[in-house]
Image (cartoon, rainbow, N blue to C red; front, side):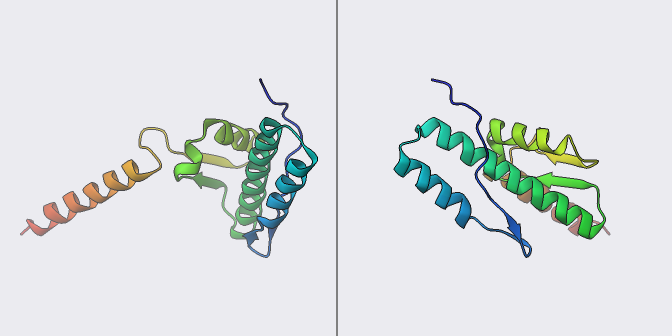
Length: 126
């Protein structure tokens, strides 16, 4: 069964931090009311995307930058990444996400190997 998109749960960016408490409170309230789990999951995911978007826009404005980079295992979730990119379509910001290198342990391992190779190469220089 496909869930409805529905509204995003609140995940406010307050004083430089995303406040997860309203997000979890909304999940618990809907669960107690008997809302279907797929709909809760979708609203949770939309809430995370909206919160990350709001944080990105605020920080870009404060820091006078125009590029947002998202990485880490959470952004392997294609639906979450798609929601986030869609939200940023309305802004004059560029979003970078992992494409060729995985954003989790595989990417970390590749980065570690690259640094080791650079160190080995530079230590051999005269």
